[in-house]
Amino acid sequence: MKIAVVVGARPQFIKLAPVSKALSSIEGIQEILIHTGQHYDKSMSGVFFDELDMTKPEFNLSVNLSGHGAMTGLMMQKLEPVIQEIKPDVLVVFGDTNSTLAGALVAAKLHIPVAHIEAGLRSFNQMMPEEINRVLTDHVSDLLFTTSDEAVQNLRNENISNDKIFNVGDVMYDAALQFRESAKEKSNVLSALGLSGKGYILATIHRAENTDSPNILSNIVDSLEAVAKHYPVVLPLHPRTAARLSEMGRQLNNVQTIEPVGYLDMVALESNSLLVVTDSGGVQKEAYFYGVPCVTLRTETEWVELVDSGWNKIVPPSEPDIEGKILSAIGSKGDPIEIYGDGSASKQIARILASKF
Image (cartoon, rainbow, N blue to C red):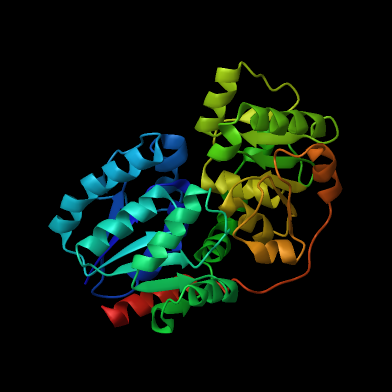
C-alpha cells in the first residue's frame, strides 16, 4: 500500500512526525513524502527533519513564490506528474496551507482518495487564505480526521457525510507528548539567550494580514516594545516579518529578536514562557498543551474552544492598547479541558488508513 504525503510548511512537519512513526509501525505501508518547498530554508524546514528524526522527502518541488495563486498553481503543476508517477492508494494532507490545497486538488482530479488531517476547522473569516484552503480541502477529501467535536459539527453543518468523518484527536498533541522530554534534554536555548523559566514572554508574528500592513505591523511592534519594558520579550523573527521590518526601516530596541528556531528549541521556549503572544494557529495550541496562557493577535481563531475555556484571548492587531491587554493576560490560565484526544490520534489515523486502503 502506497501513501503519498504532501507537506510544505513548518507546522506540517511537526504534525507529520507522529503520523510517520505510526505508519512505519504497520507492515505493508510505504510512505512517500513530497515536500512542496513552501518553507524552504534550513531554519524553517531542514532542521525539523533532523530534530524529529524523520526520513527526508523523496521529492522536493522547490515552490516558494510569494503570491497565493502563483504558489498554489505552480505546486499543482509540479505535483501532478509526481503523483502520476507514484500512483498512491491515498494522498494525505495536513492543515490549511497552499500545499494542503494543491495536494488535495491534484489528487482529487486524478481520482486518488484524499485524507485530510486536521479537518473541520473554521474561523468563519473568508478573508483568510487559510479558511479558503480548509473549506475546499475538506470538500474534496474522502477521509476527514478531526481534532474535536466542534470540528465534527462544522463538517456536518456543511452537509459532509458522517461516514467520511473520524474524530481521532489532535496529532499536534501527539507530537507535544512525544517530544516534550527531548526538548528538556537537548535544548539549551534558554541558557543561550540568558532567559529564566517563567521570566519572559514569547512572541511570534508571521501572518500576511499582520506583516503586510505597515500600520498594523507598527502597532504590533510598538506594543511589544512597550511590553518589553515590563518583561523580557523574545521574538523569533519569521523571514516575512524580518523583510517587512527592513522595508519599513524599523528597528526593535527592547524586544529580543532571534533567528527562527527548531522545533525542540521552540518547545522549550513555549513551555517555559510566562505568556505566548502569537498570530499562529499551531502556537496557540502548543501554548495550551504546556499550560501557558496565550494572546492571539487576530480578529478570530479556528481554535474557538481555547477562547471559550479562557486559555486564549483574541486581541485584534489594529486595536489600541494591545500592551495593556497583553499584560492583563499574564497568569490568566483557563479552565481544564480535554478535547484533543489522548495522544493516540496518529495511531488511529494509521489504522484507519490501513483498513480502508
